[in-house]
Image (cartoon, rainbow, N blue to C red; front, side):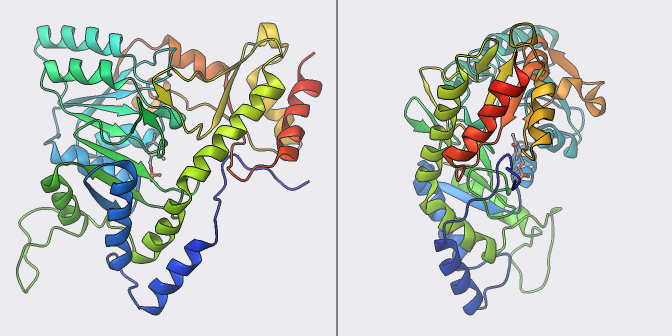
Length: 375
Ligand SMILES: *Cc1c(COP(=O)(O)O)cnc(C)c1O
């Protein structure tokens, strides 16, 4: 049987027309007309005024933090349930991450816990320099509860929407809630350029500065003049061409991922001990990955039993992100709460969720879970 991957790239065909144009025009560079057009079309799609195309989402997070003056001696509060890139970007600047647990309703940063923590830190005179909120697995965080708390203390919010392109919070696209938002086009994301990222903001100066910093910070001069340390973080014109094609089918991809999620619910929800990632009333998740929780006492097997049973049939499933506060590399970092994300990791499994996944493939997966693992 062919391997079923967790979240493989899903090309449409139109990418190839853009790519051919990029090739034939000889714009084989980390700039060019497709980069400009991709930025513009991307901003329009999500309703944010300005966008800068980058080599990765991680690069976007790094530049976002640097532009908020984050550096050695600072702390930055970060959702613990995330991919390491969110926390790594904080460390690149020399600052220290402080992790915040999830709320059960969305699995994103718990706004009450954040409020308590900020109050304590304000009293102690050690407020964080920024808060990075993650929209996990395509689900928006609860911005109407997070933003006012941060505003109260004048703390900027940066949105890590790497997994959530196409998601909406109360009818508005994610990415535009913080001072800036960051997306990823890595190969496993909802649309892809193989690798790439985008920083978006309504602040024109910040996006302009992002373009400057991501192209080695060259001052305006005929020779190479530098008064700042720059980075080589810009997106290639070839990859932007792919991205333009992918962006045209974004809504179809979101619909397909949501359909995949619903199909799993139809086939598995009746099994004892199986739960699904919730979707709060204010959220339209993209269901980037279908996440289930498996309570071993009720289900009769652990999430690891299920994962191994699927792997034995050449099907890729993965545990949820291991929270950052449980990672050896961040063992010395501070943490607010922790039980919720720890239990999600213990019981949570991401099932194959590609937008091209067929009903037959979903049947193959759910049959294994329903008949071979549970008893
Ligand atoms: C993928 C991802 C990133 C990093 O994006 P890259 O483009 O792979 O650098 C950052 N944060 C989260 C939550 C992600 O899932």
